[in-house]
Length: 123
Image (cartoon, rainbow, N blue to C red):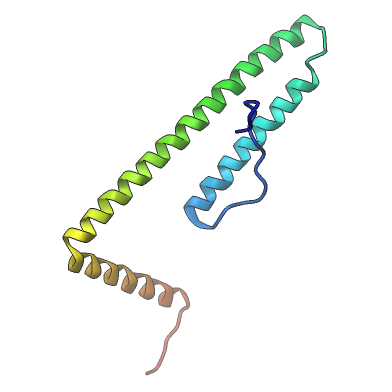
């Protein structure tokens, strides 16, 4: 967020995967809010009563959207931090179980990747 309370435009996309998709969606929402704020500033000098009511209603909606975006971001950070702490505790308490789980997941990914390639290999 900028110092004047407006939303900063985001350029480009973040990394791949779910985090990248969420970052891209967040950037799109931020860009949309910034565009609406620019539009509101552009029509601020129009004197029509209907436009003034619409501008006030859109301004309130933009303020609610910004608050919800900030709250959602804070909630996601808290959930991610909690999940990381739980995973860290589990790994420290049960290192061999964590190694076994990681090996099983790696094996499953390897088998899935191999089956997608359709590789009938003769060894």
